[in-house]
Image (tube, rainbow, N blue to C red; front, side):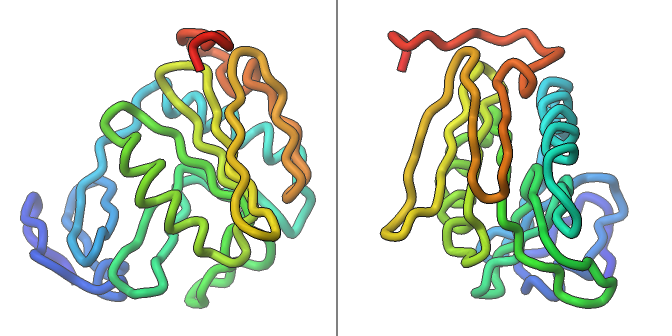
Length: 192
């Protein structure tokens, strides 16, 4: 399915969305059946994503692997979100449904923060395989990690030079490494 460049369809299903092309390099998400254009990532966002992909890639063992811009369909068939980074375990076979991610990372910006920590994070928490959701801010050194527990989700904020230990998948991430190469405000405990 194709369409004229710049013309977004009024509504579509996830199946239609996955076949749709708008003739541009613009990235899109499907939100409640509506196609929504995504802004290109900033240099800070791209640097943080690359840092995370390298750190995670050196710590997870096959068949687990980090993937960037991982598409996550919503079970209701009306939404398809783009995760900035995900860890999937198992084979990725063309033409077959890919495995659900065990970890999903969102890197926020001021314009996407509410969507990323609201709607997207709520949806990711519904994925049975997903164990951990780090939400990484791109305007200051703060990472909020949501971790699946027996009776819900635990939320922990990490600021400054914190070390983040993740159980599933087993990872150790430092904010110094996550934010390497970018200049941001360093959040102090009094700022929380």
